[in-house]
Amino acid sequence: MDIEANLIFVRSFRNTFGRMEKALVLGAAGQIGTELVAALRAKWGTENVIATDLRPEALEAPAFALNAMDEPALRALVQEQGITEVYHLVAMLSATGEKMPEKAWELNMLTLFHVLNLAKEGLLKRVFWPSSIAAFGPNTPALDTPQYSPMDPTTVYGISKLAGELWCQYYHQKFGVDVRSLRYPGLISWKTLPGGGTTDYAIDIFHAARKENAYTSFLSEDTRLPMMHMEDAIRATLSLMEAPSESVKVRTSYNVSGIDFTPAELAENMRRHYPDLAMSYAPDFRQAIAASWPQRMDDAEARADWGWSPRFDLSSMVDDMVAHI
Ligand code: AKB
Image (tube, rainbow, N blue to C red; front, side, top):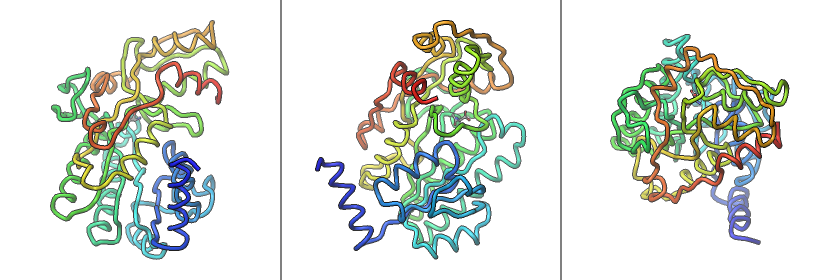
């Protein structure tokens, strides 16, 4: 057995016969949740990872319908199931959030407070909550954005992420809550469609290429953004959560870098598979959002503190997407 297989065996043995660790994933039917639940279950055993969502039909048991805004229901589930760590993936993303700002703020912030407060009361040992490149803004250095930079987000989603980061740090410093976070770039995956983000074009394009051999991008051809293959994002999440607490020195949220490209560069790379892929560009309101975000992240802290390093480059990401879509 290799070291990783050994670790999985020991963990699930301990979870079955000894000290219990049990995870609860909120928003489990979403783009990240679908893959994170599977990865956690592979490590901890299916019965030790509870999946919840507003729409639990798509989820495999053990799974429950849960509105993360409903604090009593969330609390009851945590207590009844003996949950030790929560992965809080519920959020309204950048593009949808601009259409309903108050609702986005309420959803993104209240659900975070519900989880942080359960941890503060000692009901949870650890919390994972994702932040985003959306927490940065037009005055952030766009290239090799440092961990500590000016942050002046222009979207409600970005404001909620920046505020959430600071609340995570506050709960850690004041109450000892072990909350950990990553600033995800645009995440690229084929298992579940994303919903309501500015980086979604980088997934839509693969579906359009397969169906029509043509794509109209809602971002201009030269809009560079940080992106990451979902497998890398899941690995980053698990690595951060497995790191010893003293190694997790950033308690707002870690920059993590994967790849970066423009719509034109992505299309050009995809032409290895779709030589006649036709591109047109019709930037909409999402263009201004993308223009306010970093183009490439510097993730030196994540590399130094818990050994982060991505595996996918642009070509291997494209090959994997084409193979599966
Ligand atoms: C979005 O585009 O809103 C998200 C994000 C970068 O957080 N994918």
